[in-house]
Image (cartoon, rainbow over all chains, first blue to last red; front, side, top):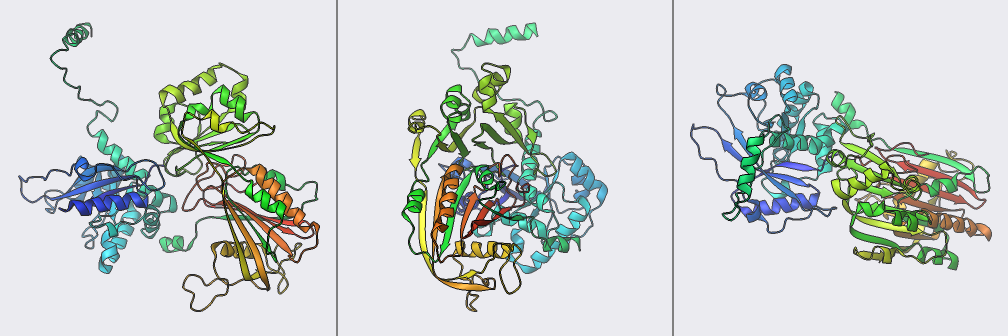
Length: 244
Length: 363
């Protein structure tokens, strides 16, 4: 099994709150968290803010409860596209180079999921994300969350589903086993619900990493620049080129 | 509708109850105690008892010691020196500490010489050892079990198999864990574990003993021949199991109306005992010591006593990769695997074994 991950901690302007959220996540047992920067894609040329630098946030990363390892912090970018002509879920599933498709919970879905694009998305390795912190805050959101989730489950049968908090405060995060139980309410089976917090998150992260590689097999690593005194290395490289 | 039906189901759990007598030839009690390797908590409850006899007290104080080593590389457990010093000369137990069986890599050494590695997909592929996928893995196989027989290896020194395992754990993917170790020696040598692992930070620990005397406890009435209980005459084995759990949690079995925590009631018919002795030992406890404790509790009834029965409960580590013998153990929402002996004054006993969702049926 994979370690537990929460892939959606909303980045606010207050670093202290963010620090509190990461510490709470570590205390609850999450080994991986991703700090999410949300961008509303309205104008054509828009400045995307710089992501939070992890070293600014913590000098020593908090240790995950029950283990001897520190928590791993990643960053993530979410783009909201509201213009239906520009891009809709259908297009996102089949063409766009993304890792996760988030299902909105703030309103009843205006469209129904159709099986063909969802199947294409699953084949491509896309994940569908459900968030639960709006459900904690408001009872109307709770109804929409559950009904949207059940719609999704009827089509995708519980494959490639991720559940994460869209937490803006430490109190909105729940423990991994509790979130797995919440998955049962969304229509997932017991095994799928646990995978939604662990295995499928790991798959989404790997999908993100492979975007920089060729078919997920070959990757390039930037070689450190040799200093002025290292003249021996240059002729060796030239030699290799001639022979190859 | 399918969701609603699914929500009403509880996660799978199994309770196996059987009855026998200690004097019986084919009684499996010894075998079952000895093959439940990783024991975390041992508790016994003696009704109508205020103080413990000297023999029991000494036994309880001598259930240790066990050792804790930090950052021990795994290849140290497959060196010939380790196998000859510890595995062959007694029962050596080891379990990784602070690793969750459903998330991380876990390693356990069983006293029969088998080293069980429960690895996640990435680590399994990196070590390159031969193993089989876990039974409780789900849609995608994410967990693999590798089983290395150390007793088998040591006979074939410098064989290809040993070399490959050694290379894999030393150079290809050196794994390091915090370990809990315990050794029950068959000879009379002193414990040399402290000196053997002196270059790693090894600490000797003693199991914690917690003792309490419960007053005016409601106990169910049991008949040793009737596992299922008899209406109005005795309680059934599952009812006793629940009651014992309530006692260990310190829950008041009176179902008072203002009790916020529990509405549990003692099963009927029941009697009230004036006092009962509850002793709990927590640590990394070897199976041999539990066998000796069980025998001593049987001797409790050598002299006539007021108590109709005594119980001995043993709980296993939630993060151990095996439950009984080499049956795989997993953690779904809870990782319990435990057994309870109810010993009657005529040396009949009830044995209850319970496992959680990701477990095979107990033997």
